[in-house]
Length: 92
Image 1 (tube, rainbow, N blue to C red):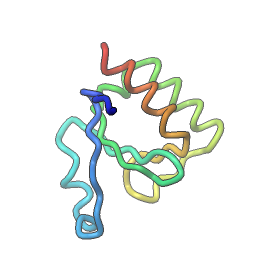
Image 2: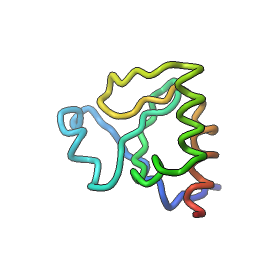
Image 3: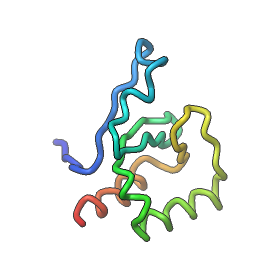
Image 4: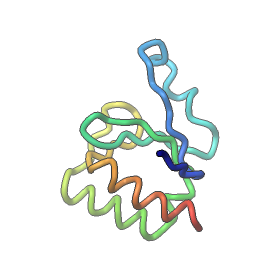
């Protein structure tokens, strides 16, 4: 059983797409790499204005620091934590 988060676009990222990462991100969205496996999500940039997402980013920075080797925002937290925060933003 699955569920859908309307504000998040899960992006497939194959080897043939490696050179066109920026093309996969529509205007008004941001690529985010989450978790140990660096799963790629495309989220609305409006999330960056939401206090709960800002708190989440601040906590991630304090705990993990920031590294952006893939060109998008890298958040090495657990994927379910990221989905929990963003699922509440989708309801707004």
